[in-house]
Length: 317
Image (cartoon, rainbow, N blue to C red; front, top):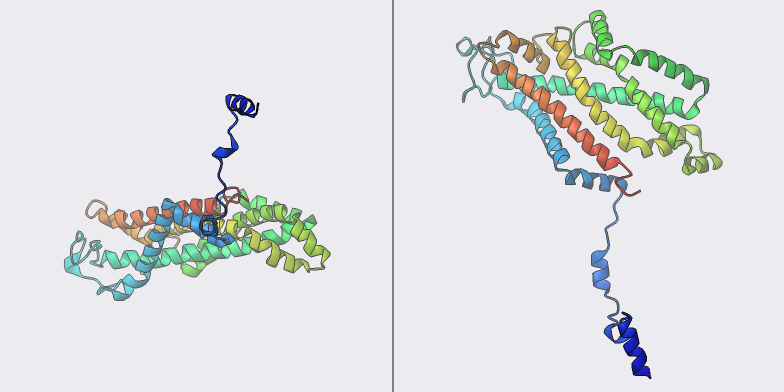
């Protein structure tokens, strides 16, 4: 009778117990399959390294910065050194990027200009991010009449093209690195302010903020020690995407004669000088234009990679 029941079960598709074998636990294999614990920043850095485009762009930007620092220091040529015999010379072993209309070495001038352009781009973007983040966090947290008033001011300034306002300010202040940074900061903090305010409106209603208020934590501490670190990743991404705009603004203003004043060099100044020698030596325009374009492209692609790395939806949170 028992054999008949087992035969019927086999016909119904049931697997007999004899087919199974208890193998027990393997502690070593369990440890091998466990995933290492990663912090928020470690996981974001891992995602950036796995993103081939973002990691390549990061290397390109790092190489540009290193060349801008060390080439003018170790080059045998000075930025202002003139050589009549090398006027408008094509690229050669002596002058890797050629020489300009005054016989000055273009390789040194390009990387000396990179110093100025990258410094203005990074410094202006950092100041804009700092000022805009502080204002946006404060008005977003407290709200009320101050928030309404500041947002109306931001809306009015946001409706005016920032480049036109910067040009008008440069006409008043004059040319120079400091004046250019000041002009770019006066109107450049608006985007960071709107972004930080939007993030603050989302985070200030979270449970950890309510718990901090119940424990009697001061508002200033809640803003800058509890809420701000939670939006820091997105703020870094927004900063990375703002740097190319600052670099382009400097190049454009210098190109039209409102930015850096000669004999100082920048990518915009070099592009302006290259236009005059376009038919004779087109490489004088090509090299500064190439580095402006590649720097802006690398920063934008790096910003996209950082945005993906810091996105909580992609981290499974």
